Image (cartoon, rainbow, N blue to C red; front, side, top):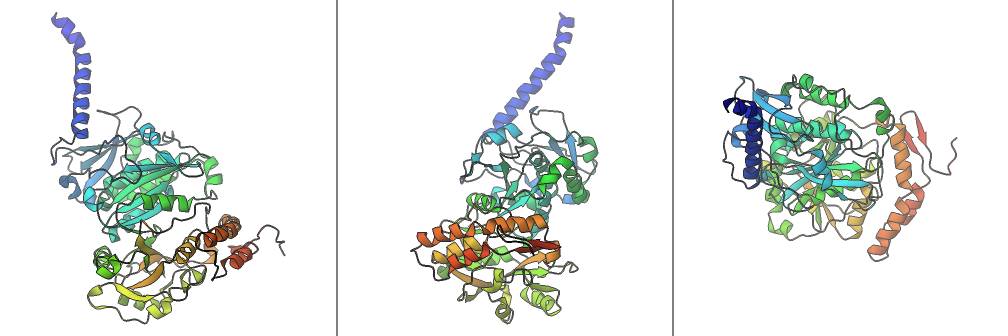
Length: 500
């Protein structure tokens, strides 16, 4: 009898482990696990509807309050884990104590709850990774989008913005698996990202998602990287993309406007703010000061006001970005900062009249106010603004890749009666001066294709808002169909235009 029990011991241990795992999952799902250092888990809600309030925060204070430098990222394939889960990430203090585990939702479950865009080419997967609820339920939300290879930008972005950030990541092919791995590492290493950033994914039917990591990926090797080597870790993941993929990946039309609209839709607050991920809101206490400004009666009652934040390029040799208007003006005087796209596409910011903005003295106490209203709207205007999420028009999703993605949406806002108002004492910084030398041929080709779509867009918008065309947008749209676009080393000609 005793020997029979010994033979059954492995089975009984496995059964007990399975039952314990099941019990823990039930307790997590019902919110009955105690707060404190004994648990690190994620919300296991079976599904989150698009636009619904997102899940509660998932990280206990004991982890959030620990310095990022104290953690190693390790991979393990043991313990209570779904076999279809790609990896289980571990946090471990350098002294080897207080081991914590965070298990990703398996890819099959993530993909099963997506919804399609209007073209049915892109599948939108909401709330794959949830931010801390204390940073989510706020009236102002930043919405942005990145490709897999730009995920590293989110560390700096989140360090300057002290509010919720809704990020949509475009993940064609194997970038789906790679992005999930990269996001897990970022969340483990960076407290700002864990607290503030909610991640959503978008897949592409023309390049279906690959859920398994490449065979070359060695978790045991990856586990040797600490958070201090984060950039190198993310770069090593990028190198896992096969050469066959990279032949088409760089020139693949990036669905910016699909991603922008999705990111906006998943923001919870009244106001939404949609910069690109490499545009940093470096002004000191920007989030708190903007909230104070938006809370005033005049702003609260203006449904169709769009509050424009000036955008500046900062020379790449400048290490410390400006955090106040006087600092920015000093860099401008030293020719180490300039208006965004000043030499490449000056129409993008011409309506904001930033040369005048630069003459206005900074306000005391770094408070934010309206410097002036935009009175001379010009086609090509691409403001980065804060607006009421419930009334602001969507970005037109027929425009993919580069060119026409932003100014077309601003034109619809102007047609709909929005008032652009330029803010003072707050601004955005973009690292590096933008030049033609950085523009590849495939980017110019995408712009030429988008230029062919401007005319039907113009006719639709003009019809939608009363049939008048005071800015002669139709004539403009006919003109851009014929223009050629320069790039580094050449010129991309429009259809029907012969090269010289």
